[in-house]
Image (cartoon, rainbow, N blue to C red; front, side, top):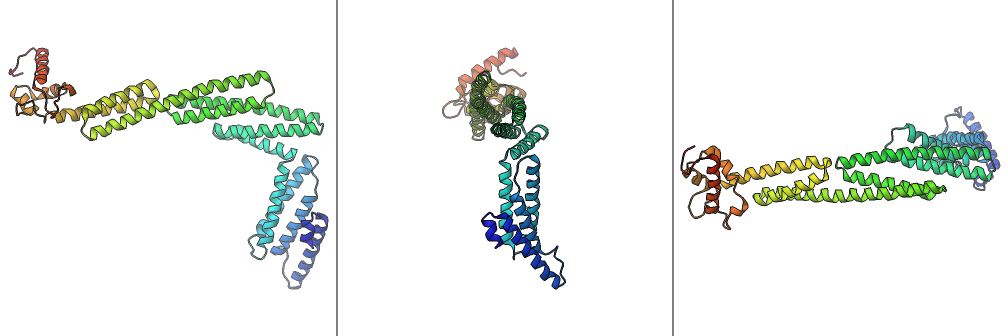
Length: 376
């Protein structure tokens, strides 16, 4: 009977039935010498009685709202305790969900909206959230204050309507401050070469300013927000272009490294120099990457020189190191000479063109002020 009355939303009748059932059951327990306050079924009945009381309570102001909310939360504890008993778990779970439904309904009231908005505002302003999280909370808080304002307007409560408008304005100020924090983070990320973060931040800034432009009824503010959207869209496109350039340079650098591993040193140096130039054009944020390219270029040159000693010189039948030894050049100078040999001096079969080498040696002798076959 109690559950039937509850299902029909006759909460007064349901309460009376639950009270009667509780009284009868407590009498049975007393007959067996058992204590009733720890019995799960007694707890279930008490929860149902309090739930009926909560459902019957009409919310007309902040005091009745707080009382009804307290009752629902207290009743949840009753059913939470009973849910662990498999004999009553199904019924207790059903009533537990009724409490949750009641609390959800309270959130939709003007007092619930105000309470939730206040909580979100405090969390965003005084909490330690990241700007993106704080923005989401502030946006929701502003919407809730705005919705509460409309309800007070319908109630013709000018005082509360004005209070909610002030809270909307205060929250909007915090949103604009938080947007500046986000813009600062975007600029910082751009300088540090963190282009994905930059793009993410600018997208968020654009989304929020776009929303504000749609919501405001003040033409001057609307135009200001629209201009900001246009400006940050330009910055977003710049960040995307920089990311594309950075990714392209990164791919070149990786390709250059793979060419080193394949022993294609001349080609590797060309590719790595291109990558380095691209990184340098991106500025400070890509400085470390440009330095990585320098290291790889140096490695490629060192390996190229090491390999150059083993190359044959034209049709002489001698390797470069044998050729230089024959020329009587100090071993300490070999690296200097080998480093001057460019790709244009290498024949199709991989040998060093002898005439090309002679030209290099001629320049070398002039620099040193010596002639060929003379000991240094």
